[in-house]
Picture 1 (cartoon, one colour):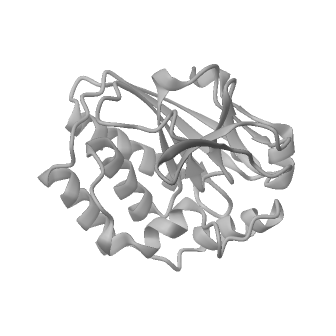
Picture 2 (tube, rainbow, N blue to C red):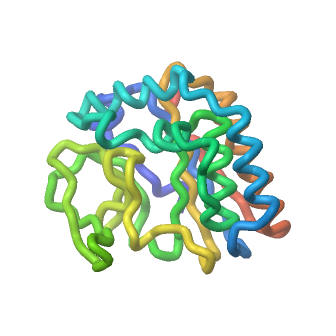
Length: 221
């Protein structure tokens, strides 16, 4: 799976310094948020820095493909604004949300078993399906043409680079195999990206000591 993940040339042209640390975690034993995972969120909130230059780099990247970051905020921007009041979702989601806040780094967590084909980061044609829940009912939306999206063979898995994940691949309490995407723009240091990956891996091992973790850095200079 990791070797098949692709960042399309059209995205690289938009932000040549983009890099993503992709990580798979197989054999997870997830569950409801607990005292430990809530403590990770609280600890991260103490280190939250909404003024980190990486947040502004993501706002600029959103503007570059036509999105308005004040309306649809990059995930790290939205998390940092709520850092002191983030709800506990489940143990694994709490783990990567905490790392995202502490390192001012967008992180997506996906159910690997729900994927159809490899993950790839592309600029949308506009006709790709994106499944959501609207008004309590399943619904299908579509990205704007030229929007940066993560997708697989079945459709969009995350819109506006890292703004909103689809329902199909979301990480739940029953997820056994996860895919995590840690996304970096310049001037974010690559060694800090690696450190964030190590911290996430450590948290996942705290949840499931025998989890099998592999990672691959895609892009960067």
